[in-house]
Amino acid sequence: MTEPSLATKTHTHASPHVEPPIARFTWVIWPWMNWIVPAFVCLHGLSGNGGWESLLLIYGAVLIVPAFALLGSLPRFLLRKRGYRSAPLTTVPLLFVIWWGWTCVGAAMPGITDSSPLPSIANSLTGERLPSAIELMLMVGGMLAGTIAWIAVVAISIALSNRARAGRAPSRPSRAGVIVAWGAAVAIPAALIVICVVGVQLGVSATDADGDTQAVAAARGGSARDELDQQRYTTMQEALSEVRGLISATDWTGAQSGTVSGTCPWVTQAADCYALDARFVFKAAEEPDFTGIAETLQSSGWATESVTTDQWGARELDVHSPDGVSVTIRYSTVDGQGFINTRAKSSSWWGSRYDVRVPDGAVDEKQMWAADDFPLR
Image (cartoon, rainbow, N blue to C red):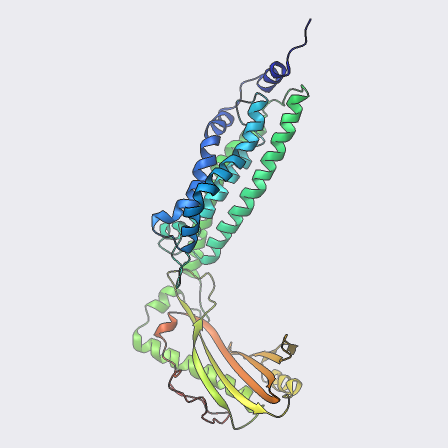
């Protein structure tokens, strides 16, 4: 009697029982998702939020989409070759991780432009209230999870293919496996929705250095905002003056001040955050007494860090006032001449940096200043 062919044995062992509906459903949509998901990642910018990255992805789609589709089809090809006609339950949750993970990459990718980034699809759906940190988590997390899950699916498919080749029947679907598969199909998109909802709430409730939410800061009138900015500017300059006074009482030049992007928690693209900064320079014959300065400031309630040396040989000391002002004291030499640069940066508050008036362009950098003096707004 002749032995059954390998193809006959494989088919007989691959489908000895009825597979669960979730396994058959996943098997049917598998080839479609191999094309739809990478196409969405490459063409998501056509929805109106695309930047420079979308231009590259759209032109590269003719290569990226087929390449990703072929990679996604590899494990299915291995299984189909061995007679499988439904997805093994062990691969079903991983396949949903792949598809939803890479969908997150396209949905959470902001548009890169020459100025401010354009809101991602996910951010637009939340009214531009999704914090940038949540967007980054969804994009990077989705990419990592999708890649790791694909590697796992390939490994499982190879193992099952080798098992079928050896003539061993696959394990019968377990009730626990079916529950996990259905759970993944439902729980993954639900978890993504929960993450976005929680992210929006974090952005709405986030407070700045004064304990104000973005809504409270936005509702503040122009005159009240201007008066508050004056107080913040003065507080920053007075903290810097305290440090400058420990170095020299006079002969400070290079006065500069301005606004920079702040570091408010859970910043969204619909809410701006700003901080103030200021700078003075002093020509010095020798390095300042960093240790003495740190000890004096510590006695006044300041927090100090260790003195560091950068790659150019400049020495720096970072100190932080009780009011939240950070000051950097930097000593460097240029052509044998020593310079002490002192730079202060305030805490961060909600609001646009372009609405804050500071005496930046009107100050003569060659003008001499006393340690307790600074440009007024």
